[in-house]
Image (cartoon, rainbow over all chains, first blue to last red):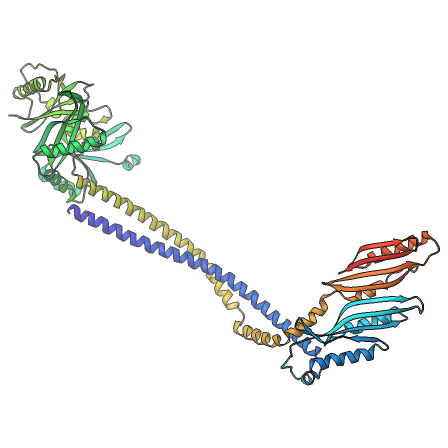
Length: 186
Length: 449
């Protein structure tokens, strides 16, 4: 065996071990990456499971809110315009809080809502009368009444309390479509 | 015993005319112990190499054709000196392809110039390679090739004096002048016999005279190497004392064989500066050495990789199982997604309505605050006016009133009780309060959250 052959053999052996080492390192890297990705995938799956639970909860919440929203709407919502609904509510207030002075402003659209500014002035001998009126206004849902200011002043002469309630009837400016027939659910 | 086996064995093969001597030496503290020796002839050597398990050998040889010369070179820096010597040797040596060794003598002044005298020794690469290929053809390696005179010279201890060494194989005798292990001159002399005879002694005398007259060096003694010490058949008187070369104290060997194997043993004292193997061969062996170490490192890394991969795979299996179980336990995603999407699209229709409705709930309730005022127990304090206004999720409240009392003390007490009642209202914090004792009037500002 001459020296060239010996050298060739040594180079060949070196190459082979180099290749085997490369393969071994590749396998090691792949195995490590696989393990790392598997851990990540498992934690991702946990996150997915949690998100699915959240989504199911969200579905439930959305369904409830939608049902609530549907019930807020008047039954004749589809037949009337928003302005009409606002004015009808004002009518109802006038009939509910008798002898009240009502000052109405212009209908305006702000923050995606249509608003009808209203100032109610009335007097009552009892404090509870004012509370009842405010309670009634707070109980309105569609349109709802947003109170801005309440003043209760005692009248020295008549021993009465003069109430002034400033606020606005408000209704979302966008028209809601596709309302299911509520007669079926009733 | 086990420890001895683990120690790296050094095998020296000495080519001495028709005889090949082999010694097996083991390192020992401060030297070597020669445990086994053998003498072979040329025909037996092939079989020896075939059966020998040792892979690496040190070779000592008495080369048949050599070139030796003493040249002078100028005193220059060390890094240039080697190059100059090489150029000079190539100029003077008649061999085409050769390897050489040199010994630098001390600085001398010749013709008013500082010079070095350099003894150079060259052999044909063919001859060295023929020697080496006898080993490599059998799959063995040669770690060094030493000319015998250099290894013997390295072993001599002359304490700064010159000594004329005599070595001989067969009918030839090598006479070489040595000082402190460095050769100054080599002469080859024919001899009628292998032993030391009067004929050889006359040759030595002539060489000593040459040294005195030409080199202006007087050797202090004649040093006989190897078997020549045992076979000393000289009857003539010598001008110099004759002594025998003995191995240095670090070499331990059977005394009966030590003279016979002196040349082989001397290789144990030599170093790489005596190696005359061709540069190409040295480069090749160096490359192969690197390849061998590199391959060994690769193998080691392969084993480590495989072990580590096994650990990784073992650790991965339970994670994989956990993952598969997680996949199995996962709910029907398509159903949930489609359900979510359809509900979202339906919900978006009512988004503005719900947002509007929820915004109405955000502000603290006027009614709650007004109801809370009914809880105030102080009858002696009359509230004249209440003003509440909404501002950024907070209700700002102003209360005016007056104490209905007969004297100031009662008014003060009523005021304190009234303020205490206000403080009891949850979410209400008084920011300003004023009590005018003269008019018994109060003014309170508060925030309700």
